Length: 461
Image 1 (cartoon, one colour):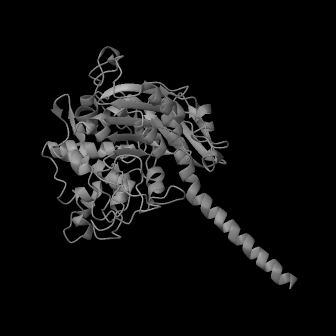
Image 2: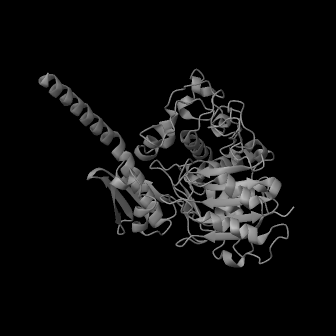
Image 3: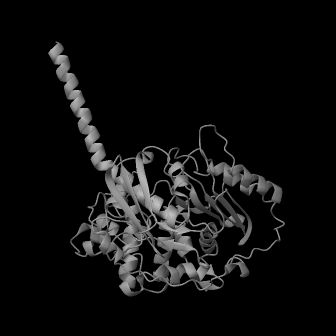
């Protein structure tokens, strides 16, 4: 009996050891990759102190088990997990940070990105929204005290043991910037991660190509891996990619090693990695939120524009045209902008993007997005039972946990919004003339519906 018990204990011990080894083998490179990329961008793009990032953005398990080393001489960050799974991200001026994967550091550093200089160097003397000169007048339709109280409340820590840590709130009413507040250490010049808000920018860039007659959303997506008409993936359209109904077998799970974490932290060509996936469903029949779809869209932009003009394209065709002079996309190691996740901008620049959609894709009388594009953006595909997603922007559809209820029951149905990891959001509420920019950290205790309701309650009509 004792021998049997010992054997069972040995088997359990060996199985546990095998699990730990497998977890380390699969997950440690993702943890160190996330740390290296995040620390690199926060330090070299946002200008943050590494100690602050270690204690805030990277301060929770399992991210906190990594050790991050910032090298200011070669503008890099190297991260390891207990001395293993080393990952390095390098910073290049104008393009931000890129994680080294599947190629040498020398090869990556030899890549050339020519980013156009901002059209306007000093925006403080130019009136909002093209510049940063803000008028002192306040709209009569808004109760200023109630609005200020609502914004102030978003910065309070309401729950002991939780860390809401709101970083910025900006309120636009009828296009006018009427209120903004920043947490200590942040200001109007701080570039902030957008994470999945990048998807919305990618969709807008696709829209500019549609506007110029270079793409059509209802035709098969021009993806080299699917060129063969006999390939079942050949039927995937650009619209399917925009609406997250491509049918590709892609798992979006950030709690463990999955397609999305492998793509972001282990692959040099994220679009190629995703395009290699097989179909799980017929295109257009199932909604499956996938960062991989967004990166395929980003590579389609690159292939459509061509190598010569690709690096400058987002700046010339979108950012600089709407006054976003403090924005950058970061590329993967293959040179394609990570259209799913890696955008950085000031809070005001993010608000400008929301204003573009609020104004139906028109900026200062110039049409940036096609006629009907914003309307199409607000239409959920038939395949989405929750009716909560359009062209890479979210809609006020039904709550996925409570399908009979609206996701935001106290907010007009017509609201649509860019949504990034950790409440990095741009809410657009046309019926109330509002655009709201919100930035928080990782905590999930924040009540978005209550926050937006308190903003709406300040409107006096």
